[in-house]
Amino acid sequence: MTDSAKPSNKRKRVVLTITQKLDIIRQLERGENKQDLMRKFNIGSSTIYDIKLQKDKLMKFASSAETSKASDERRTLQQPQHEKLDNILYDWFLLKREEGIPISGPMLMEKARDFSEKLNIAKECKFSDGWLSCFKKRHGIRKTDISGGKKSADSESADEFSAFFEEFIKKNNINLDQIYNADETGVYFRCLPTSTLTGPNEISVHGFKKNKERLTVLTCANATGSHKIKLLVIGKSKNPRALTGIKHLPVAYKNQKNCWMDRDIFIYWFKCIFVPSVISELKAKGKPEDSKVILLIDNCRAHPSDAELRHGNISAMFLPPNVTSLIQPMDQGIIQNLKMIYRKNFMRRLINVEGTLTEFQSSFTIKDAIYGLASSWNAVKPRTLRRGWRKLLFVTHFCSDSSDDEEFEGFRCKKSELTDIMEALKNGCTKNLSLTQLEMPEIEIWMNVDKNIPVTETLTEEELIRKMIAPEEEINDISSESDHEKSSEEKISWGEAEKSLSTFLQFCEKNAQYSAQEVMELHLIKERFMKKRELSFKQTDIRNVFRRMCGATAEAQSKEK
Image 1 (cartoon, rainbow, N blue to C red):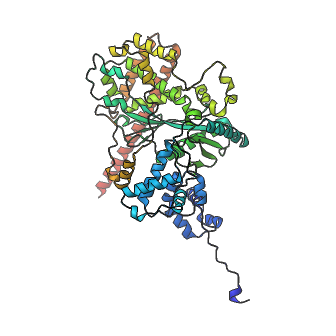
Image 2 (tube, helix red, strand yellow):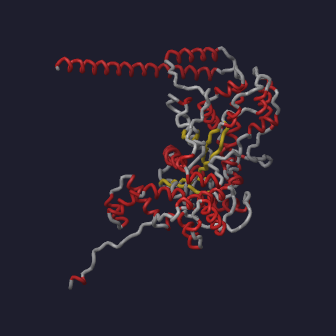
Image 3 (tube, rainbow, N blue to C red):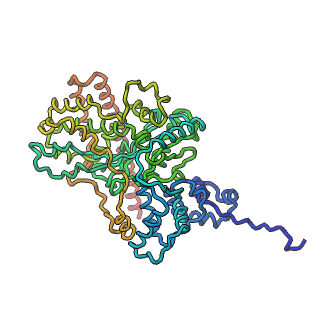
């Protein structure tokens, strides 16, 4: 046999899809052996090296693609000739899709021509069917909608998805406690009823803008109401003064300069909050860690693709566009219930304020809001959470929680609950007359003041272009705090804390409003406090002994020299 006739041992060239490349990255991060991956995918070490270099770009593409199919089909990350134009057009497309406006191929091409003229590159561009096809593939867009008119809530699509989801659950044998829904909402966390700001003692209120100071809150729970994920709260400031020195928060806190939810924050929440919490819940229930879990989310622009929201058998599923108001569980009264509880507790504090309403509003910090929101989320009942799923999973799963004559339309503020607030205002010991003069319609408006505020960034076409061309013009101030917001930096000693705790305990012991059980619970808290104080002193003594030993050693060494 001649040399030319010998079989070649040369490895066949393999071009991996983006999904495969992302899989390699995940396996490398888990500590998989490089040689094993080379054999598994039939690739060389240089390919592994290139994939690692492209990690950020690959992750960015996967998070921005409309579906995971885009990553399954595409193999390269070839950049467009005019990257700024491409990015502006895609941002515009996402904005219009979120607004429910259908976009056709010709509309995309026409808008591309418009943007190219504004960028002064029209002569360099040709917008053909081939260009459109490449644009759609580049961003993982499945199709564009050629129907006209802005879409409203789509009852037919909602019914179709509900039927599909029921069948999906049965086919995959997924328990209801392994199905979750997450959704964002904006909260004006220290908003006062409008007329209180112009009461007898508040004629000239400085800082009315504080009414619009906001947080974005992400809520998530499963369909049985047995597992609530702790809240994610997004504020403006990275390190709010009011949170200085706080060791443990009852929520996950992230910052974004406009309090928007964005892709990076959502990915952080999914990987660092949702997944660990779900795995812990599965363990607690004695279920395998690889049990299938579904996270239902809407098509919000800030949500990454389903390719990015995967961890083993934990994955995301998107609701169809224009159905969230009809069947998304969190939008069926759960979020409204959370806000109603928060505002009732806020009003209770407002009634008992000693100073003026302006002073109360200024002193109510982001820390108060965070603990108030966490407490309110904790007070949302499992029954309330279950009911939120009735429109998606039909009444059959939740028939034991309902009656035929019961109307369940978004947990509208019941008249009796509003009446309770009104009675509290009339009978409370408040010194602010403007509170006692509030009428029920205004209370109801106040309860719903932030119902529809946006949770993601919304830009005009001019702002899209300016953001891309001159990002340095973006506002860099991330402080959300007023000049009056208090700091928690002041150190409180163990002795001061014990004195305050003892005073509060004595007050409760002699007050008929507190039951014997509640007083006993306070005594137990004091006992735990004393044990922790003793432990703290022991640790301090050990540190002091160690410092003295180190000091003596250093002194001896210096004498020897």
